[in-house]
Image (cartoon, rainbow, N blue to C red):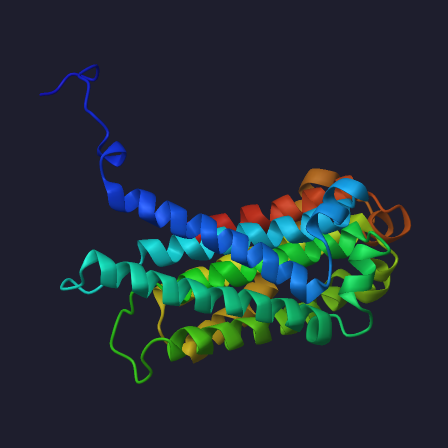
Length: 290
């Protein structure tokens, strides 16, 4: 038996393909940052250093985090056994580029579908709306989680092959995000669009955390089931469970406070942060219980 103190030389220092993937990943992070800047028609250095815009930093940071998730997911996805390292690298390049396009698509969906009442670009760049920026960052990371789940091996053979399967799950996931953005305000009794337009960080944190928790649950459902109808039915169940447990746990931790008043009237970002953490905790527990 080897001793805990026996030295083993890390193979990561000598496995040269690891460094190739690292360089490829850095290249895609750079490409993604430039693509985000072009679509938003903004200078990264101007917003981050000259204007010190925290809302932009949150939104852009969420996008980069999401891109990092999909890059790692592509690298970890198994390749055919007969692939050479050149074929694996090319395959990873194609899939990472496709995933980047889906993330950029999520940016447009945020602007024109989920929040059509106002322009995200103006709210983040001109009004420095941190509440909306948190929600946007959560939607980026949530989309990346769904892309990662779609890249997981299929339990059984399905009619559609890759990459159509990933695209289908992306569309279904974005549709469920839209549904959740409509259901959440009714369950929470909050004017979501109105409060986000007023730059309410408490509501942004609460909804952003809840949306991210919903994405984690969707990703877990996709990993467990290949059937889209099954995932959709589970998603509807998750909406109900998150709503009920949110109220129950808030009562346990916070007592008889008015969540609506704390989030809307007082803009209590501490309560919003607590709701986000509770939603994520519920999601992690439910996933572990599957």
